[in-house]
Amino acid sequence: MTGDASEGLTHLDAAGRARMVDVGDKAVTQRRAVARALVRMAPGTAARLAAGDLPKGDALPVARVAGIMAAKRTPELIPLCHPVALASVAVDVRVDAGTGVAEVTVEATAADRTGVEMEALVAASTAALTLYDMVKAVERGVVVERVELLRKTGGARGDWERA
Image (spheres, one colour):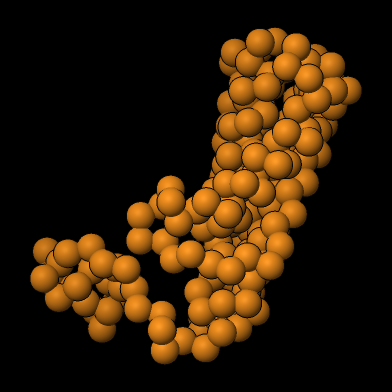
């Protein structure tokens, strides 16, 4: 396998070896990314989650903190990911007890040379997995799904939003 940045394979050098992309010449710009993960469970479990009535305690603040911590550690978890000077990470969890869905939404921002999409995605994933961990004593069949980038702003390629 061969390729280099001129061929569109930015994380491979000319010999096809993995490499970290050089962002040294890129301008520092404001970056923002919003990601989401859904956690599906039985409506009764979701009601207990929303009420903070789980054997392990109130899961929502724990999930929020877990998401923030995960965003800060993204370069340790994702190979070739640059450390980014995060300005903010906001984790929101909305629980719909009627449908049994908890929606985790994360917004990450930074002024840096590369984007914060991975930080937002890792945060959403980790917060969702934390919810699973906190509710598994009540229900083992919980499903984490649809971890996805919703939108991003900043950078050379500009803004993007999921249709």
